[in-house]
Image (cartoon, rainbow, N blue to C red; front, top):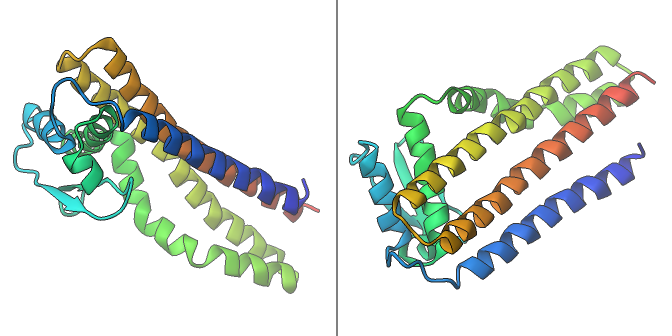
Length: 219
């Protein structure tokens, strides 16, 4: 595969997935949740029901910047999600709360993903440099080393998939537990599925790039 074609494909995957989540979020952020809960209230209910009343919920800046910080054991929600009373806000807040539940219950894929973070941080800053030097000076051993390091980043992307899908499953279960109308539950599932596709696209793009580098290293 030509590298320019690879760039176009990976860029299309990323932009397409991002556009899809933005469109679904926009639609369901306009639909008020019948429970009347804000995102923060829904997340609090989910955390408390799992014995995690000790986890604080903070407000942060940015759109769709919501996250759970396992190091600080804090749930961070964007203002729109924290204060929002929409289907989308509930879905995203409960998804992030799902990550907190994973951490508390030592969900294996989440633990593996967290263990890979230091290695991925190191790899992301060095693998491309090694690859470039290896190709420029024809050091095939350095090329192989760079590819092996990049494979760690790809593994991280792949391990992320079950983590994200599981957090969404936990979120939907919590939302269903609130006995919302089926249409609202379906809308929440739509938002979370769209969000999951961004991770699928990222993993696929990384895997395609890895296969490309493996292929050209054999030429």
